[in-house]
Length: 324
Image (tube, rainbow, N blue to C red; front, side, top):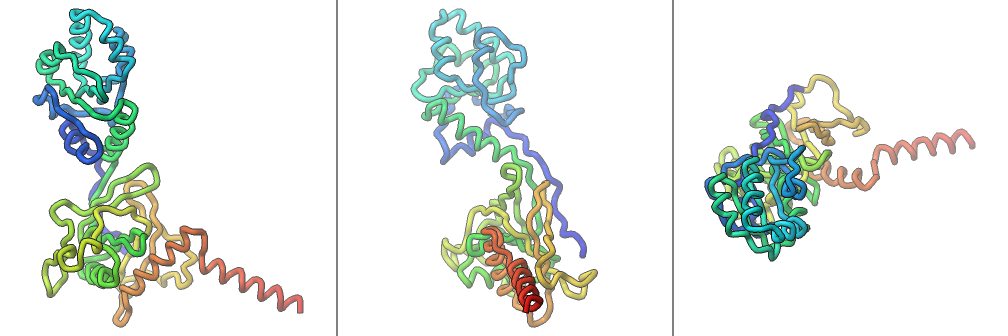
């Protein structure tokens, strides 16, 4: 069976503007100064409190991270004279930090704004306290920096299980998805699915912004799933729990596993996902098969495997017969 092509995995370059734009809906960021620095690159997707740097110790300073002033740093700066504080910011911004954030109720030092403009360093004001802001910012940065790729496949939410349906063009991916939608399941992406790694062992799938909610059915054309079937028929994103590979039975290189005991997996971006290879042949209901495969995967995730249960019964039966 030939591999279904996927795009090469990439690690995105994050700019301060990316961080600001994606912060919407998570935490409030107000741009105070340094708009010319919105294109600055966040070299390390982390936040950093520049405590030692403000005291003049710059060895191993994480300059490429987003700088956050905590209460300790703020109090330290407040105790300085205006001249010394300006000199401190001159040195800090000369390190080409991407941006600096004043969280909570901390007042921004207005003498710093001209220095920030000159060095093209973005200055933000955040409503959250430093602790809450840093936690939310780290989660956002991890998402933005996650390796990602694009796969020619259809992504569905079937009874809470994220199922990626892949196969060659014309094999019936979109038609299967349409049948599943009519049964009450939800579409995530049709034809082209964007995948990003979440943590170490999880993958999150979503649609491209342009194609979100749309699908193409041969003979009918482009459909807006949200408009036809309602908001419950679509999902913005979903974790991939199972890959169903649709393959023409005539193209299979050898006989397939009839019992489901073989633990097949499909790899994307270094993460192994359970896989079911489903032969496509006249008379086979792909909608029923995909739905049942998802329900079986839900049982497997809970620890129940049907073929293992059957094996135990066979062993018990043989043991009983031998003892009789």
